[in-house]
Length: 205
Image (tube, rainbow, N blue to C red):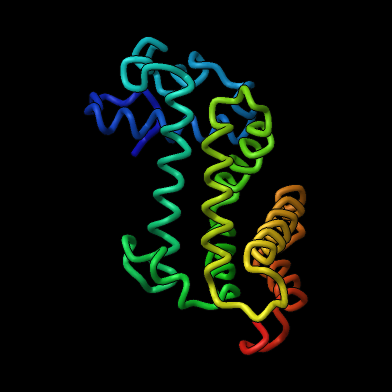
C-alpha cells in the first residue's frame, strides 16, 4: 500500500488507518514520540490532522495503536518461525528451548531494523511515568519475562532472573547493532552472545 496521500484512489477507512499507523511508526522510529506531531503524520499521509483524529481520537491513542499493531504483527511472525499457530504461541513456548525462542526473535528483528529502532526509542522514552505508553511497556516487559521464564533452559538461575538476564543481553546486542548496522550482523552478534549464555550444545542451552 502506498503511504503517499497523492494517489488518485481514495482510501477506505481500514486502509487509511493502516497507512496512518505505518507512517506514524516510521516517523516515531526516526524522531521519537515527542519529536513527532499529528501534523507531521497527517502531512506524510496527505490528509489533515483532523482526519487523523477522526480515526484515532488523539495522538496518545494513535501511539497505542502503533505498538499494539506491531506487537500483533510480531506475534504472528514469531509463531510462524517457531512452527506453531498464533493462538498457541504462549502455550507452546514452555515446551521449547529458550535459546530457540531467542534465535527466532533475533532472526525476526534482523529483518526489521526500523521497528527495532522504534521500540528502542519508545522503551527509553516510556521510562517516564507521564509517557502515554509507560504502563503498556511495563506490562509488556513483565509478560516477556514470564514467557521467557517458562521456556526450557539449564542456566543455573531462578527462571525470572534468567529471563531478565537473557532479555538484557538481547537488548544490548540489538542496541549495538542499531548504532552500527553497516558493520554489525545482528544474527552473528547474537549467536556469539548466545554461546556464552547457553553453552555450545543444545543440552547446555
